[in-house]
Length: 247
Ligand code: 13P
Image (cartoon, rainbow, N blue to C red; front, side, top):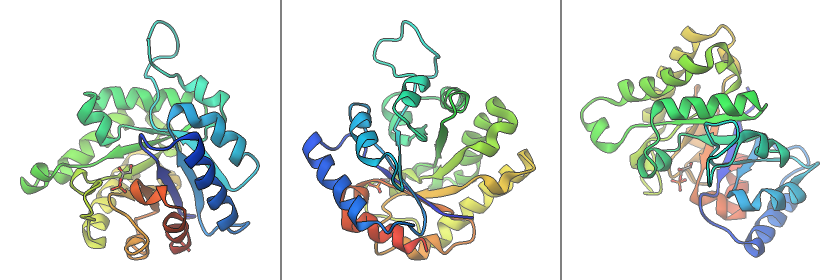
């Protein structure tokens, strides 16, 4: 399966710095990159990224989407609006949204459903906290989070991307070892296999302090189909080296 490398810019960037970063990515990327590549940017910059990346090898997307279709939901952004800006992907259920915005498994599942209905691929994030890992609950937590999405979207789960992001590895510099990550990816793969016949289409990304130094070992694992990269996606040379490591 072709790997997928996604940059999650989180709440970073400016018109000026984005232009520099996108220019460096466009010039540094081979015409046919070793992996599929995308950047998920803050809403206000979608038009800029669309303008800079249309027709090239870099796809783009958003970091959240409303669980509602349209209407009186002040501050929300709908999936059809993301479609208007050419988004191919949207991240849903990132741990920062679960943690700081109280997003439940059900809300995350309904967001994934909205994205799918608009023809956008949801990148569904799952992952345990350090305390949950210490209690031996990792498997239970990630399966529960993915099960909620399978329950709501049914057979369309074959159209999603899953991202395993252990919360304790996000922004901490503490990457999961390739073995730790692979063990969880294998659990998620088995869960998908039980849910849909064509589960091999579903890519399972790893996220959490992935960088140019550790990417190759993580991406070499049999069930790691790509990466969701935060901090290292803001530096063009680092992000390009991660993409090259996906070969
Ligand atoms: P870092 O790569 O900065 O640890 O962030 C990972 C992440 O949360 C990507 O969604």
